[in-house]
Image (cartoon, rainbow, N blue to C red):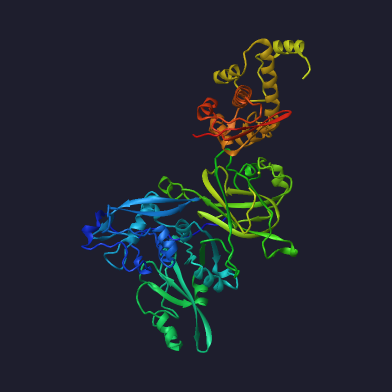
Length: 627
């Protein structure tokens, strides 16, 4: 597990501020003056340099910029006192509308501002993003990648500069040509290093934009340079190749004029070798996940899954927690068509995929004390599913099999992603938090070069004797105070309690008892919420994760254990669903039913897919819930 140290904290200042309209700030307010440029983004008193570095990079790609900041907005024509912006959120674009009032202090904008005192597009964009995430305060501290993805819907890759590939400079150049967004930072080791300034005027724990990469001839040899921008709008690098540095005197005058602007605007050049030594991390957001290490531009396909980790049912933690890891959500893909270049180990045709796991809404929940979870995922090669998408692989599989690929060490970023080449076949993707019992929602994106595929004997006399002998007898092998009134009502709803039907009920209870004892692996007399999945399967019910979570909420206690009473109540409820509703609604005897909202409410269990196996016959019930 690895802790990410990004850019944090706000600058200290007077907490007092007031919201004012643009007319109170200047006589001639403008939305954009002369086009959006990097100098329109200067940081204020909010510690969101990670966001501003992304906004500055956005100005380098007009197509992307005007998707986020729609054109034809102004303070003049058709002005209504509102502005709207668009952001990508977990698979869809959302429109955010804000009014024309901004926080100020002493008559000046408190947060982001432009060098032009009457230009306001960047301040309004910051306000819209704050609204999306719940507050300005929620924007304090973050990773540039997060904003990159919200501006583009792209997927990001991260490079540690001290372990970067030998062709990193070419990767940067290609990314800039493709319009990708790039950011970099210097990691910190202690809180005291936040925004600490080095002797060469670089800021630690602070996000910079990468805005250019050019080669110049210096004293007869090529020199690789990169251009960075500090969103503060000042505080520039003072080492080699900085503004007006002596190195520029040995460069062709035309190149010098084009590159060495000598303006204190927060933007500067530095040698690529110094960049690798001084900075820690480079982040690239691919607008499409075309490989940056190839000269070819490919069209990729996207497969999107949504899921959740729920304490007690689907929050199994990482592989260190073998008892619960298998209960994590599982997603199956089938890679059939290899890459066109057929690159792979041992000349075996392989499929390239880029997998990104993103946790949802954590920034919005920041004010409630919900920090980013440490997350990761593993991929397993599976050969026995045979296109059956309903199988949830059990604990024994993970004990016998190692991942074919996995993400980097678990880390507390909003998204973790990895590019990998895999042989053709079926794979199981298991996303998880590092620790079990952590609640959260996520989306899982799989980009691929080629579209993947996402698919008894008569015992009357014996029973009478047994009933008279055992009725009321206290058992020591299970913890139960007997069936409560609600469980008894469930039983009565299943059948009338005549002697014959009570015999049927009794046999069901005996069957449930045998299952309950079988899955009680620690002989505690209760089963935990993870053992419940095995118990349901033994009883013939294979449930999806959402149904499993609903059952845990309904029948588990605060310690996430389910006693025999609760287990029987659950079984009876599912039996009722099968015996009464299925036969009633399967009018065509097709073994498939579709329920309306009113009918679903009768069932009281909110689930979408239930697979019921009644000993010899497998039947499917599809329930479409609008809850």
